[in-house]
Length: 314
Image 1 (tube, rainbow, N blue to C red):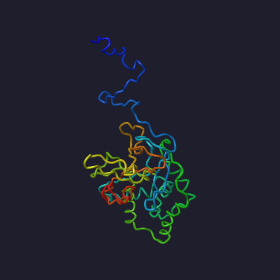
Image 2: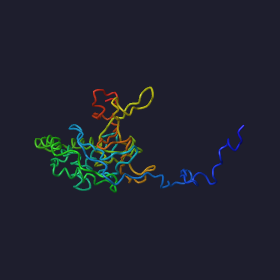
Image 3: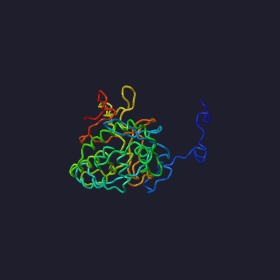
Image 4: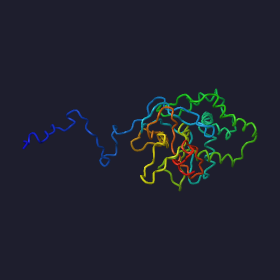
């Protein structure tokens, strides 16, 4: 029979494991204090080039792409809104005049130039030609990032060149040259309302069909295109993350608006974009718009495949 000295483990050193140089685990008890320790708060995005404007397709237009690799849960960029207006998702035409005023009368004339560069199709709304390439290039590669907060996730050079830009904008030039008359107010209001429907963000906690909420347009975040969230497997209840070729499917980003939880660094009304999974340099940044109930025609990378089994019903 073995002696007790050889069968029992030695007692721990006095003072606990942290006395041996191991870190002491920090536990936050929210019931004892209303303040969160700084060590638990999330860090903002890095102050380096994070995104680039790219050309998604002639039907979709521009998109936003990763300028470097990102790890899952890493924050990509932090951006303040360029336009805010009242909006109700359940009554899209509830306040069209207010939305139109916000689009036609932003804080400064420079804002109009930025929005036209980011969304050339909106040049029709302002009865203006899209920017020529020599004017659009510095905007798409620098000025469009002017709303980034404290350089937290900066904008790099555009991924396309003059030829692609010209092919995309030439039909708009032709339309403006042949139209020759201004749009009726009702038609302009519908354009403004539709623009807010598809590009504006509302804080998730404020989604309420009974009241209007502040909707925000962002120069970069609003450029991010939709990608459907994969359906859950009926048997396992788990959504797939890769297709048959082992390529990632579904949106790769999520977002937060305003300071909340551990993301105290986010400014009020500002948006911070976060990676849902690892993202490779050059990959398009996407999220699920959740627009399947708004007559939204999905053209995401999964829905344009020959088989649409991974996408939500169209």
